[in-house]
Image (cartoon, rainbow, N blue to C red; front, top):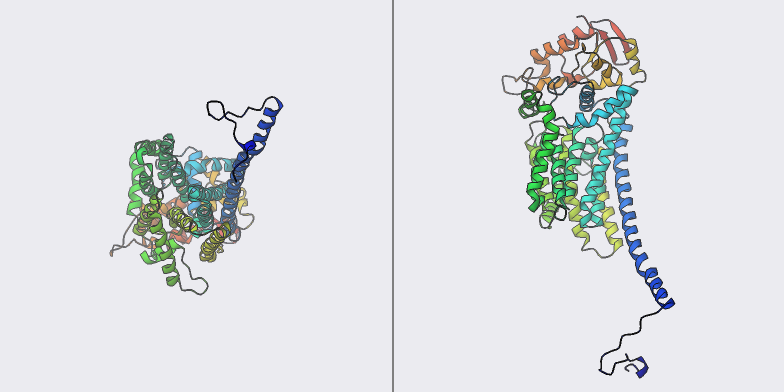
Length: 533
């Protein structure tokens, strides 16, 4: 039945519908209150819910990532443990910079200068509270940076839904190549952060053109961490679209800002050390081939009785499917190109160390996140989507658990820092980490007469001490007479010396020269000998 006469809209004599009278006085106020009590709080609640969800994502992903990076150190050598060498080199370079010694001009340094600049505040703190404390704080800061990288992965993936963000963020947080490289003062956390920041900014550059310039600056600074990051910096041009000129300008500005202050004082030396020495270095004995490298990039280890090869094939198929899905996803294709390009760099690299794998970790996490997000769109209901996230992250964790539970580092015996009080003068060492633990690094750097080599074995990649065997392979350091001569000359240049690193490549004759000096300090395997100059 239609509405009765009383329900019909009143009409004017011309036939037009009359407007209902507006509420007056109290009626109007009541109407406004009714509208505010319904519409406005809903909007505010929606924004508040999104903010709380985002904060929970940041805290959860960041917390898991930080705990994973901290745990492999705590269960191994501890925050102050030794055994990595490279992190001691970078801290020593930063400490030398704090004391007015420039990389390349005043000491050999095979990497771009960003890590020395970023680590300098912690090295300066170490001059006040002691080298061991400054080093420990620096390590914790780099672990925190690794946690930020996991959050950035989730942030980049947020536009593809919560499923993509959760899988990518948590997946990166527990992916062993990322954990291993972000556990201490190393190059990769800085380069990864730069690439992810640039990616996040470029996602919004179409609406906010200035962000393309900032993205370029971030990518340029990333090249200042390691020259390999020039490849992802160039690939990101694909994301800039109409803002490519702004991005390239920012890339040039960022690169100039970090390189020029060190290039201008010593252009030839910097070019030789950062570029030519790196390109000319050969692989050490036992450098893995392409097959083993692919296994490492995928995080493939024997798990639950499944052979490594079979496991790697399965992971490779998953990665390949993810790449295909990403290539078919608008706005995400650059992630697949990044993964392919960085993988090619690592497979072609003349040398290989475990932390190299971090170069492919971010694009791999992004590809897996996008692919899972696309799959989640086909799954009905929030419960099923949550189950999908749990299953994928559990699979990533399961494939990496064996390595994630592996402890790293060698514990420092209590009392090693007493050597600074017992042994006066300059103490040379073949591992800067040992000098840091003894609390003598900054003391050496304060004395202009002390010769300090932040990267002792780095000289074996320089033309001065680099040598090849007749068959073309890199000559073993123990057989390299030029290296033995220069090594002994450096170690005996101070008042005392400590020899702790086997990879230095000591010949038996060189060992005897150092060990023949009077023992000035002994604590377990750490022995300081007086030098005979």
